[in-house]
Image (cartoon, rainbow, N blue to C red):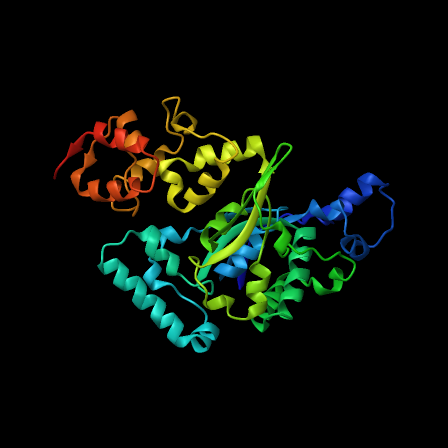
Length: 358
């Protein structure tokens, strides 16, 4: 793991924000040492924060994303060439043939003309990725303590721990903070779907790639078996397409909001398909629930770039019709493939598209 601090607001002038907040809650002449304040597991230490750029493995990114007390913007694997995934020497030596095999399989699928959304599922969890996050001082220590715990499961997590200590010297403050496990293990009795009052719970086996998207929705409560995979010792060689058991719970109206957006052509319906079907057992979803139902595409820039070779995804038929943007004939095959696993109403919009040939 490599961390670069982009901005740091822990101190304003010559005063630490935790000190300023502490004094405002008590008095300006309070003599409590700053080190004592920083060692308190309380909201006063959620006020100072840092913005960081983090380069790490896909697995480490998912652990970070599992916390809910920070802001995070991750680099999607869709913008990189999956066949050129990079990983640390540690994993190349440990899983030499596995890494070579995955790259060979990806290249074979590329040559067969398989769409990127499918072959990128062969990227291993040890592949490098990056994200940007704003995290509080308290949040940093919670993450630090969890990586201390993970080091007992796998020695590789020690690299992250050393990076945290290099930049923030967290060890001397962490003893007084409570331990928080952001990836609690799913019990056998919890492997079921259903409705209790206003809460819908969906249990499924799903790709780790989908788990990565689900956990970023703060209103979801989830439990899975990721910790078990880490304990088993071979998690680094697993791919984002490998399955994980997960139980997701949320209030009905929040489920509606998420599912409505995920029906969108731009929002990778394919990977969300099973979740959407699972939730539809408890609530109805139709074309009328699409984000563009009122006649305006909220993801217009993402939709526009689909009409170029800069994005591997197929152009959206509804966007094409709404904006009267003709579709190049060369994209028709990709559109048909994309529509093949979507609700039938998409076929209607494909027929209405204006197509041109260059």
